[in-house]
Amino acid sequence: MRSSHQTLERVAAFDLDGTLLLGDIGDAVFAYLHLEGHTVKLSWREYQQLLRTHKSKAYRAVVEAMAGLEIETVVEATSAVMNLAKDYFVLGSDRVRKPKPRPLLSQFVSLLHEFHYQVFVISASNHVSVQYVTQTWFNIPASHAFGIQARICEGRITSELVAPVPIGAGKAELFKLVAGSAVPLITGTDSALDLPLLRLTHPMGLSLWVGDDQSDYEVVMENAKVGQRFLFAGSDDEPQSDDY
Image (cartoon, rainbow, N blue to C red; front, side, top):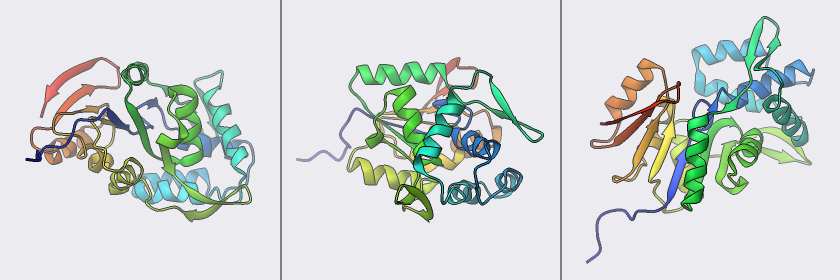
């Protein structure tokens, strides 16, 4: 008789910004492109305003605004941001934070590699930067790293986004598309927007919560699956265990 339980597999799925990274690579790269004088179709100030009023729309708009840029330009900007000597750079009146690997999660991902886990990253930052960062700093192959992806034409980014767009339910949809029938034994994020991804966690698995937004935390706790287990690894990287 076939068991009704899902098979345990060595699969993990993480958000990137604010989770594996301290900071946001999508924001930092977009700001750096402005700093270097590249033509993008959305100002930094407009993007900040959009973030305050409609995050999902902002995440899409910032990638669409890169239309016309060469892929290599975004790669170079990503590398420059991640290798800054300082912890921030200045754009107008704003200090833009340099993203850094979160020490606790970086060590955890290394441990998962040792135990032969397939580690996936599903992010709402631009696809080019996501792949570069995860390969370079977390040893996660490009085939397992996904961001908001625009179609490419002759080496340049277009404004046409590839579905599913990994925001909210789109993250869960994209994971299912790229991972097939696999069910993540471990998931991790810092945002209530990623609740659909968290809810994919295997019943015997574990979800990592690294967010420090109280309202997000409340939404996640109210909507998590009954019995879903969480490990709280806050912004100070000092984890505390708890169960939902």
